[in-house]
Length: 101
Image 1: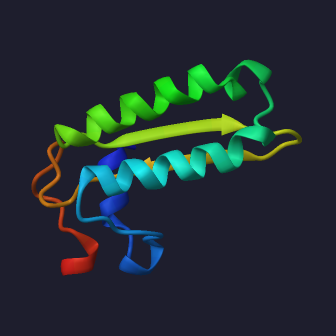
Image 2 (image 1 turned 45 degrees about the vertical axis):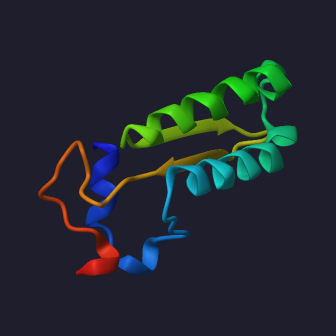
């Protein structure tokens, strides 16, 4: 499944919407730092690694790319953060934006 296929979900499945890559990156950073203490792998919690991931996401969103990140948490849970562009989506411009259909 391509990340862009999330656009095929109903609008009710959308957690947040953003008007700019900067807003989306800020949200990503906030959620990343909130969840990081529970990451199963200690090296994934290091501030330098979190900063590098946030920087990568910011650069990707700036050129219109989609982002996906996931981490195992302590126990058996898995945490994901996905941001998909839909003004049109660069990967599949024929997919509709759920909030506009």
